[in-house]
Image 1 (cartoon, one colour):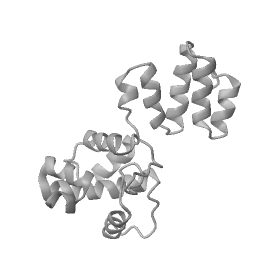
Image 2 (cartoon, one colour):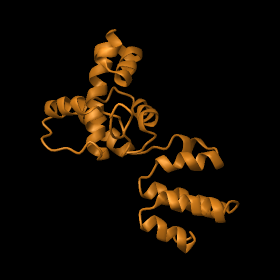
Image 3 (tube, helix red, strand yellow):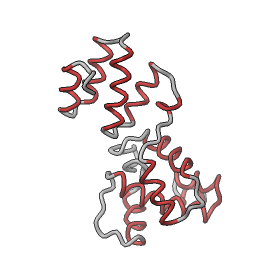
Image 4 (cartoon, one colour):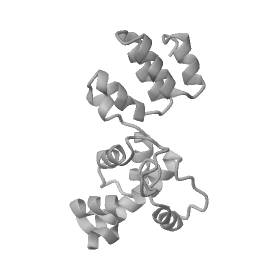
Length: 173
């Protein structure tokens, strides 16, 4: 990050990643060094959803499919069910929220794994999580993983993923 222009550094430190991206796009459109350092700055801040915007400029599987929160995912696999593929969880997070932990859908699903509040509450109760923050990646992944494991065991892989996305009620219709 110290190789970024001072204004971009200041914008990142002020938690204004949209402005930092705009600054780079406007004033450093052809400076690969700025873009590479911006990649690392977004990664260090766990702002993985900005990597998609970088991927438009520099197409790369590392930008399109970052291993965001992989340690949280693997931790849940080790504790709960090592048979689930961690890349399936990553793929679901990518499609549901584009790695944005603050994402809220039109149906009010929230966080990385796009959990409905009633689904999160039920899963959190089963997990004995009295206090949780649906926007906190570790909590969201733990609860979302638990729910995903349940729908996959109840419906199988194809219907389970469909159920995760649209809900069990919609799937049964």
